[in-house]
Length: 108
Image (cartoon, rainbow, N blue to C red; front, side, top):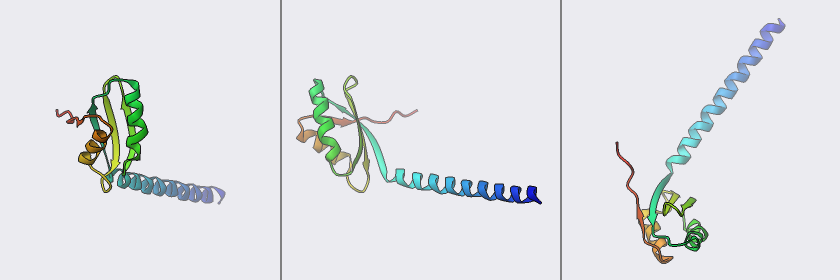
């Protein structure tokens, strides 16, 4: 009798965990469909340029994440599709005095 109750309880717990994981993963996928990540080649001459980008681009409407790679002269921007686009981000870089060109993804 105790073993049957334990088995039922264990089964209910496992089903609950599976359900929670499934819906969490589904919400995660929906959230990431609403964003896009683009890598820009940016003409940066010094670390002050990189700091200027780090201090300003994240405040552009829709920008969710920003990674500046000074050595590679690249800036990776993740943004909300409903709020902005690549053209608007290029203009934002231009306002700061930088030429930014989106890199084309590698195609195999």
